[in-house]
Image 1 (cartoon, rainbow, N blue to C red):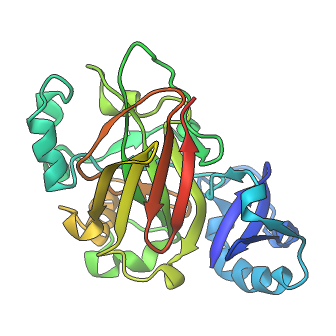
Image 2: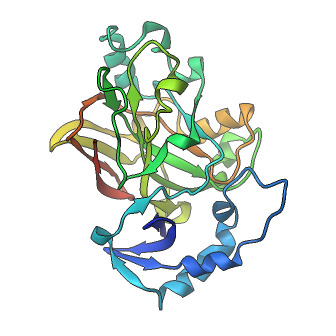
Length: 283
């Protein structure tokens, strides 16, 4: 199933070119009192909500995909984790351009570890990216984003995919400079997710999925997740050694080669196999 939020918080099911408004199923969510959960309550209750969403879609109000504004498909991620230098070709292009990529940071994810992105940087594809530092270079980085569905710590790699709720398109936008990654990648709107989340059962095996990015129709990035240095299960297992993973947490799996700058007025065409293709404006 493809699940989205649209038009300022409406919950939708996407089938083909139609969005079905199933917001009323959220009445089935449990009520919480302090201490409030750290996780996303919709993702945490997804198993219960999915059949209700299927039933509700039959008689739900309908909207054309082209007519709605897509919000992030995860409403309340507790944390967003990034995987630096997780494609060999990206490592090679970074090593060849030391003026752009700091030498100390061009090390593989297994060596340098993961980094955190501020949840305040998360936006939907319809909002797009606003360049906050026009005097500096802002780069695009398309990535498969993994949405955690079940809490876990010290997760075995063999069991890792059992903890996944779904997958979505991710843009890990980056302003270049000397600061730490987590700062430069946490600028408002520099974590783009969407347009919807494809549930894990529909998405299937994430190990060989095509992903690409164009800017104004010019091909920039084109690869497959089979080129990941640390696989999706490996990333989940690695992350869970340091953090308790919670429903709604997002793992950005890393970007392939072809990273490059964007400027206001550009339009990024991002695509991931089994999720879809969408335009993301740069403002």
